[in-house]
Image (cartoon, rainbow over all chains, first blue to last red; front, side, top):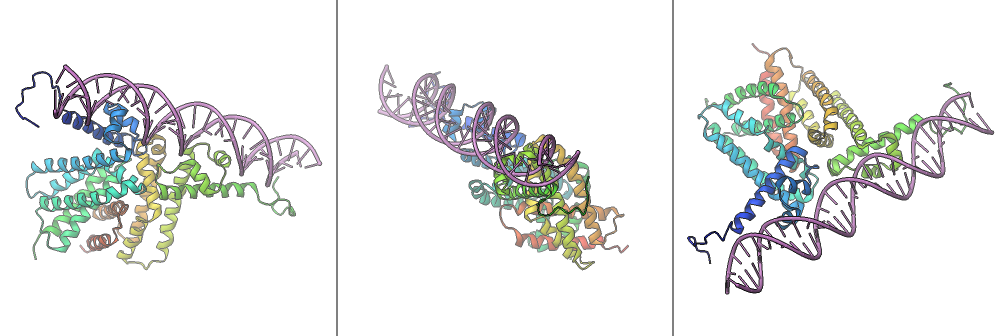
Length: 207
Length: 207
DNA sequence: CCAAAAACATGCAGGCTTGACTGTTTGTTT
DNA sequence: AAACAAACAGTCAAGCCTGCATGTTTTTGG
């Protein structure tokens, strides 16, 4: 039975749950790092364990198979991406469309997006991964859409607005891909600025 | 010495060059197929040789290393993509913006784009591949831009037009990525239709 | 305090991939 | 026709990745 205030002296160093969660987190973070640094095919279980400072036995204890580890990492990744965006969104003046777009654009060029893209592309041909990815990404996509509509203060009920917001997100996805190999920021800024003007015109509810 | 009309009887079955080129082509096509079917990490040299119907020795004779093979395949891939687009562009009524966009959209959802994306993403973390990819993709990107401007009959000199055309291509890239896991065609059609209207307004040169 | 369970550590085997090596067939050149 | 070069075929060794198996430490519960 669990007693919150149980005096344990110096005997109980760290509870098991905490230790477990800690090494699991180290493994998940290491997996994401691996994806960013070495890509999907370079992400091996041994390398992950090494980078996490976790022995191979401990790794297999928590995640018996590579698929289990990666899937957990993907879940963790989605969570972190959402957190990051929401955190930055909080300190944003309302009504500034350009700032919202800039924020999203940076989310689509950061390392977390790169890792997500690696998994996304790999999932196309890895059945196990794909199966788990499909519902997850559908959820994440919807959430991101809603967040965007919210941040923009847009009127979701008009179809052109829905289309424009979705197009914005798809455009940012594409710009993120273009940014993989060569640094594209100059060109990207120009394009984003132009699109932001267009978007403002569509969002503006003047009949 | 080479004599064009040399009567060789039935002795010379097939010239060496032709044979060489034929097996090389088989290998390159097989590589692209492998990328589409099994993704980057599933594209192994043995599988390629097997799928091409080429012995391992012959494969290593023509392409001593995997990098050499893949790079040749990428070159081949870019060529095929360009050919495909140009071929379809020829039988297109002029002045129809929506048809041009549809054509490009289909180019960004077909198997050739998928293969290119696999290599593109893998190139991020494979130095040898990346180095060869950077100039190639810059060229391909420019060519595609010019082709698009040409097909649209757009006035390239006005900056907003340049931005809009580039944004269009980036949007299509993004839609292509979104189409990897789940079939997105319904949503895609809607977005493209909306985008096309916007684009038409920008391209329209009425001062 | 002791036993059970969870967490952790290390070594090992099977399978796969890559590139090299040796030998054979086919085409070219003199 | 004979020598030479290119294309082709099959096999092999080294290295890596994954997952299992056995043993050790730490925490938990009686």
